[in-house]
Image (tube, rainbow, N blue to C red; front, top):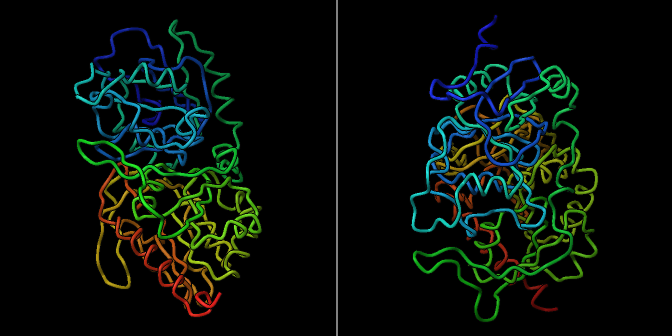
Length: 405
């Protein structure tokens, strides 16, 4: 038996396996089932963050993925109703499964309102503990993100050949437009502002200084909070909203959100909209999937990464200033720098692998980043990018031709 197929349960898992992870290459990993009962096929990735498991699992960018946490103790601070990042709690978009090393302990945190296992079940997330996550992470690093089925059955009965075939036959994330599955169903206003200890979240007050339309490809709540916290009126629109509708709202700027799936697939309907918005000369700011689709709209291309970037400790360098920031990342596709046309400048690069992490359009108030400056979880090193966007919007509002109108 190869080393790949020797990943098994951790030694403290004494009972019969009630969950399995079956990889497309035939590897079977056993563990203890937690959360929802059933089975689902998805891509397995790993996340290196030490905190914020609830925000990670509810990030819509994780749709179609199973998250392996490299940090061993997950769930020990419980869950609450505030640390959720998906915009629509009814659709409950985000990761479909998760893999843990240690068993979940009882929660120990003053903000906890529910046990992690109960929360997983309520959200329909299939989970398993008792797994050697270090070995699984090493396997993903070697072979890349893997197609797999995660299954939970309290009776411990699994049709392994059928689950293996299910994993093998899944097409994977390439070519999938998942933004349409996680986007808002209709336009809405957002007024919640960032969390302040120990007051909680606030709400916008007074007259807004700008109007930002956020295109929701799977937007995180903390992005909208930071925009609202800058005094903006924020209108969220579904992913397939056309440019004419957006422009009819008279925005001062447009935000292109994060989201899941293959950017080239979402680009089929998103790129024409962005190209029309670019012609309108509006300030535009993109994050993650929004960054990738903006690059496609400007003539660049995207590629599937070997293992992706998922974590809250990624070093990124600003090529304009030389400054290094520690940022949160969550993406399995990247912009191919070599395909960026003249006039599109690469502004940020990953210091892990040199991949593209930002761009700007020469002479225009347009920029984007691959990483997540809103964090949640992660470092707040890059919060200033939201102020940069607001400053671009303010400068654009003061243009003589606009003032004349």
